[in-house]
Length: 106
Image (cartoon, rainbow, N blue to C red; front, side, top):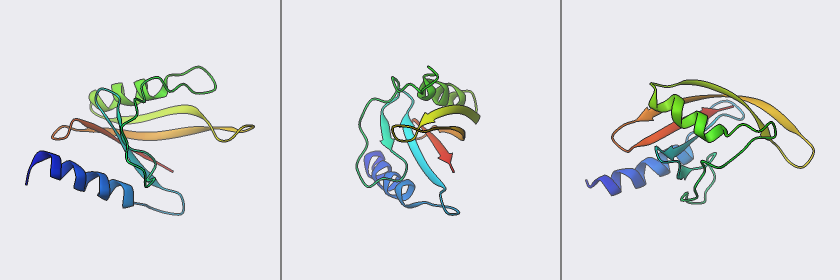
């Protein structure tokens, strides 16, 4: 199997994984290009490093740094609609063979 085919299968797998009522997975490349976003059916490809939370944090930069450093949790504020934001705690880890930082949120 080629590396590209393995990545395609990885995208499909991550997109379909769920746990509990609201648990999901997503992934960005180590350069900050989105691969899978919150289990949505669209393909990734958008640059995500510039995403900024309502309190000014560039949270994707923090995700990537944590993943590259061996993984762990990142807490940040995320905008949920026009009038609501919430704190999130996300586990991130690097998957070296694909160059992806994979995350899980709930």
